[in-house]
Image (cartoon, rainbow, N blue to C red; front, side, top):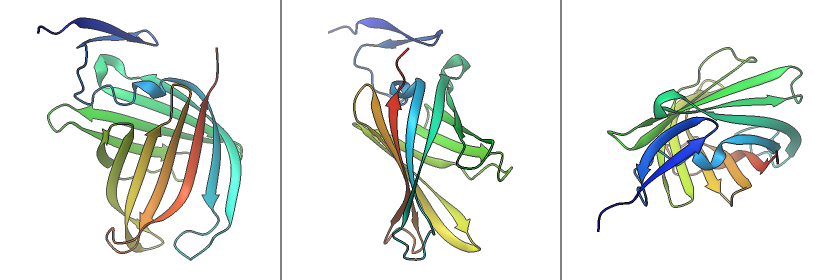
Length: 176
């Protein structure tokens, strides 16, 4: 059977794809728009701490030109004046996403986490350092429906043998 062609339109950026095509390039399409974000962070990471600190934020998600990927602008008054930017770029050759982060607290670009989605769950990992020691970092994105999503960050101090989830964000779409 010949594929049916469709046109996806996201915030004015259009791209053509075949119906049922799942090469990964549209994995973050569900995230486009404006979100309220309920955050919970572990007070002290990798120290056995069980105290979670809640706070609120907003996120605006927009596609990049030419189908390159998308960007997120994240704002929270948890840190006064805080603004962060996530850049998600899809590589069709490897079928993987590269996600980088920069914010106005640290003024550096974090090492990219790499990965892909399987169904409604995307897992992205990289090596990094935390407080002077080598760690493995994992981001997990979960599509929970059209208007809800979850992001989790976990650190592993032992090359992925064990993980501590230290930040959870619950996304709720802001209706226009």
